Image 1: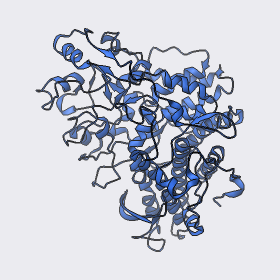
Image 2 (image 1 turned 180 degrees about the vertical axis):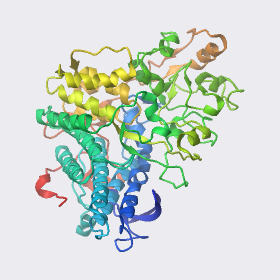
Image 3 (image 1 turned 90 degrees about the vertical axis):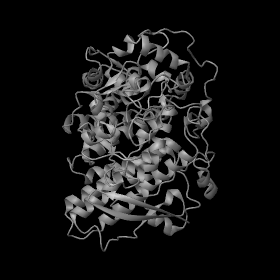
Image 4 (image 1 turned 30 degrees about the vertical axis):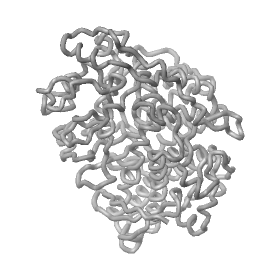
Length: 587
């Protein structure tokens, strides 16, 4: 038995909640400071009591968010670590934290859902249903992350019942297709409960519907080939969001990721962090891991070596050792500048109190940056942009309160409207992989035209078009690895080839090139090069053969402690079939 103590900021109130568990996947909150008798008595308490599910239980997934989602997929490079090299095992600390975080979300969502369900009549039906629907959507999101990360997983429908049964050392994993059915069951109930609109930043009916579309698209291939009915369901749910929600894409791509737009119409589901009040686990710290040293005044940025990969650069059409700076400075895809810093790039929304942020001045001009390193530290020649808020002035200007050491309030977007547009376009390609459907083309065009203003609308779409577009649109948003996972269900050969052919290594001697360009304006390649010696990773190290389909799919191993406690969690153990609709109910 272990005890972890967390303090959560709950929008209007701050409650202390103890977390007691017999194993990670049976964690559930112990109501030390409140219970049904003294909380969830009013609408305001129910709304506030769900608020922390938007941040605190997810906190330990933050590093896993980009290490799993972006390093494994080849979008980020941070040296030859376990995620870049496909050698992640059950003892990996970041994997353990990520796993515990996802199970914690389920535990807390279950407990809060049941508490609000039993709330007295003093709580209105609207507040009760809305809060319960939010709980279920977050629960579904946690299961969605879990099944795409670990493959077959247990289903813990109700933590109290599972603990009472005392079977936490023998609970079995469930087949992937059944887990997706359980997520669908959960989201359908959430849709029944949620209103068509909610407070800004909070989950509503259309947010749950958007997630349901993404789940169906992912589930479509999990039995070894694309299921036409699942693809049709994904398309129908995505189209409902596009046509009926009233939500629109922001005009400027980079604006989506600014503090003042945390709750924009484009952001459907996000972690809504806050640095106000310095409540640990309620804050975002991604700038620390992804921002260059000295990027803010708090001494909490160390992300020089966590850099956009060479392969992602080339996906945007950038080849640093073959082009001149005009190639990227004048690149027509506005998402490039919003994703990675390159020589010559300037950002008006960072360091506003200093007249804006210049990438090269930051490195080489000590008058501009008192801690300028005088060299490039990035191993790939670029640095991250998304998940950065800037300096202290930028944080106050964006949201009205200060950041602090490892504390900021920038939202982390998990599901955006542009993703739904691309889900719809892909689902409409069906099992053939192509479409001339005008609505699908319009959805794709809306995403690409925002980024490339002179882009001409195509007359047809292929699956390959959408696959490439998803990478550019959603780069560094924790999603790319899960695209490989879902495609590996039915076409592992494509994924193996795609990953093996990536440029996942570093450049040599770029710092001299950058300094000379800064001082003379000349981009002259001399002794620079790309590491051709480090071989491609063995992607089979993170694959398992599906007992039903015979195809290999991607997964990560359960943390060692979980397997030790319950051997059924071992990767070699197959999941069992569960008839979800006859076994589970939210009535």
